[in-house]
Length: 186
Image (tube, rainbow, N blue to C red):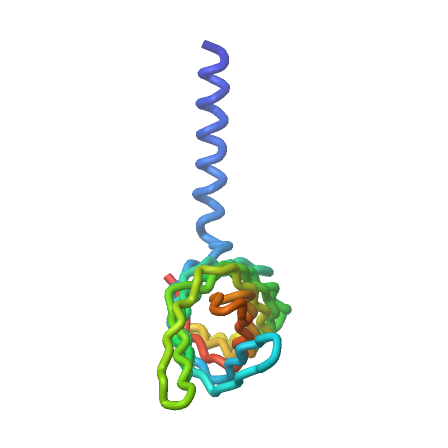
């Protein structure tokens, strides 16, 4: 009986504190979209291949006072390679008022794409394997006061080793560029 009473008092205390803390929300939840341009390099043993690329994606996350955590989906396309990436990112924000600088890192996977190789007018398509991917970001958030929108401009580099294997060749993917992101805060 005493344990149940103690449990009830604990739950009521936590709910009372949480209800008062809700007036000053510490975390903002958001969804958003992004576009970007940059370059895409396939690093192989004897030959590196670089093409301009475009990126489209979506994000969902939680914005805390010092950190930001988000899940991200990206679609990368260039003249030779089209692939997808799913990442989990952690950002550290620098204190400021309107323009908030940040840096971050992410880990995830590259999956479900194809690399088209054209040699002597013979086209070969190599399917991208699911493989680990890592990324680093550096950017700034523009916070428009009174609106539930935030805009991010960032530079980023993504690395994925051994995206496919054909004839003992396993190229690594290096995707880099600049992207603009718009986030809607709930």
